[in-house]
Length: 305
Image 1 (cartoon, one colour):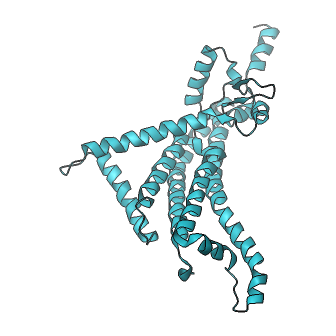
Image 2 (cartoon, rainbow, N blue to C red; image 1 turned 90 degrees about the horizontal axis):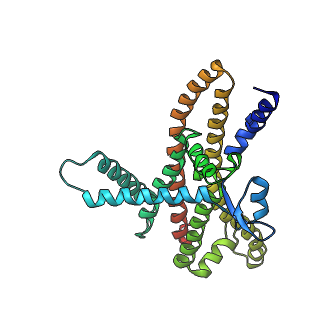
Image 3 (cartoon, rainbow, N blue to C red; image 1 turned 180 degrees about the vertical axis):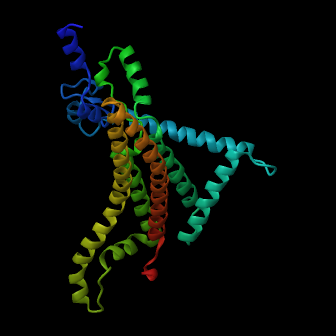
């Protein structure tokens, strides 16, 4: 091989830092500053597209997993039997019973929407988290092959397959929960009751002048507490799954070092994958439980304070 060919091959190969950055970059579609629409070639292009750019990989996998979840539950519902159930029916029934028992324990009000919403949150988030268990390069390599076949540069084909490692998804879900918190807080307590909750707690006084002085303090504290719910809900899920993905990527870089590190990386990867299964399920469960708790708090009347 000539020096020119060797240099060319080296230039085309990704360094470890470039490899990590490549796996942490979304396939983004949006409008460029000059007005034309297209896919971002790098992170700078994605940033220049602004707020309305779409992470196609994140959005695509979220929708695909939602459809899979719907079809799976629909299939079980259509074939449900009182005879000896199938393994899939057992799993679905266990999930439904588990969610139902948690809703009954944490939501002492009447609202037929809460249990289905909690079940959807639990299963959907679990499915999104579980994408982290796929081989780190399997689906991105397939996407790169398709992209190169369509004429794209192989190093510009980005493809993240774990939707919950994208804050747009986790914060989007948590802000949907936040809108429901506002809706139920107002419909259950009334606008006046909701306003009193924000302005008359946690500090109160029977002396009107002192109470008036406490209103701004109460509002700031309660408003911060209200806003922190969706932010912490979304960032908790994002942070845990993002950290797990980075560890998988770092382990993957060991394979390109040498045989010893490659064998060590394989062992570490198996151990981390087994541990990560716990994280995947736990984070889905936490998101569901906090959603139920927030819905319960939104239904809580002034007398319960």
